[in-house]
Structure formats: C-alpha cells, structure tokens
Length: 282
Image (cartoon, rainbow, N blue to C red; front, top):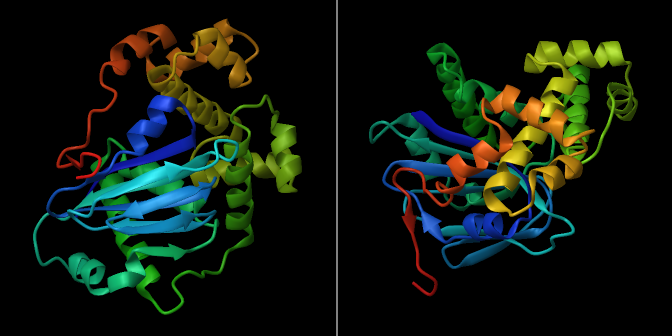
C-alpha cells in the first residue's frame, strides 16, 4: 500500500475552490479515498446516495465510485482531511478488509478526536524520509483495522492527547485571527510552557510555528483559487503587515506570494493520477 496524497482543506469557501472540490469524480483501479470532516456544513455525494456532513463525519470511497463534496453554508465552511491511497497489488490484506466491510465503510461518525492522528499521518506520509512514509502507511492500516472493530469509533485518550487535540482545534479555528501563545494555552487550559512541550513531543513543532504553517497553507489556497490581493490575504490571515506575511510565506514555501500565484494558478484543476472526471448529468 502507498499513501499517494494527504491534504488538509481549511474552510473551503473560495468560488474556484468550491468548484474544484465539488467536481464529480472517481479514482482508478486500486485507489481508495478517505475524507474526515472537522467542521462545517455540507453534503457528501457517493454514486446515487447523499449524506449530510457534520463534525466528525468520515466517508470512504472505493475505486471507480463517483463522489463529490458540496458546501451548503458558507458561513460554516468545511474543513477536512483527505487521504488517497493505492494498493500496490491485488489481494492485499487491506483490500480484503476494505472490500469486506460493506456499507459500514461508506459513511460513519467517529467524532472530532482524530485531528492529531490525521495531522501526524500527513507529516509522516509526505515526508522525504522513506522510514517515516512507511510508518505512516502502517499507521493508516492500523487505523482501518480499528475502525473495523465492533467499537471502532471509540478510543481511550490520554491527557496528553486530549490537550494536543484541543490545541489543534483551537489553532485550526484561529487561522484568520491574530493570536498569541498565551491565548492558545488559555483556551486549552494549560500553561504556555506545558503547551510548547506537548506540541514539540507530539507534533515535532512549536504551537506558533504550526499556526504559521496553517496560515500559509490557507494563503496558498487563496492565492491559487481567489482573486484577493496579497495585501487582502495578509490582512485576512491576521498578519501585522503585507511585508511580514510575504517574509513568512517565502520562508515556508520558498517563493514570494505573487510568484507562487503565477506558478501554481496555472496548475489549478490538475487531478491526481488515476482520477476520472464525470460530466454533469453523466
């Protein structure tokens, strides 16, 4: 099994972004996709069935299944993780699990306590180190087997995990605001020092660096899928100035915001390998 892509979509609300994620499409042979929603309101369409999206909704698509995501309330925009995996060869044990579970795999409610799992999966799965990518693959397989267990939606949480989950929730909701480490720690209910230590141990990054990265990820989406100016984007994301925003942006992406827009806007709408688009009414 190979994890082909892992993305975090933050507050889906730009017109081109809505059209892209709302496209009716399917994936090729051996490709499966999992969507885990953290916030927002919408509908998930899979073939001829429609489910309402709520916090903690998880949906699973098999090869060839046509699906799409529709936002229904832009005042409550959708944020979610999507994991695209490909089985390297037919008959893998994971395939037997995914194909054998039937309707239980399609849609379920697992709650919102899995932010840390998906964030860690994304960090490892997209790593340049093969050992970390392999660790992510085994982590995902383990997660699927836990979901298949009779009480797979539940899991005991340590106090450390609870605090990290809460910190991730707070930071993901603060992307468009200027907040301090003290603000985040107060919302989580622990000291600043404790918060920094937990995030470094669990995520390998300090809270404020993680928040800056989230802001830049949101900025990349806005640059590519909206016509907002760099100044408007920097203000929307709570940066003190356009200069500060551009400096942080280039430090993380390697490109200035305007250059990033020119390079990647032309690639908007490029589907993953193996994806098939469905025409409306098709």
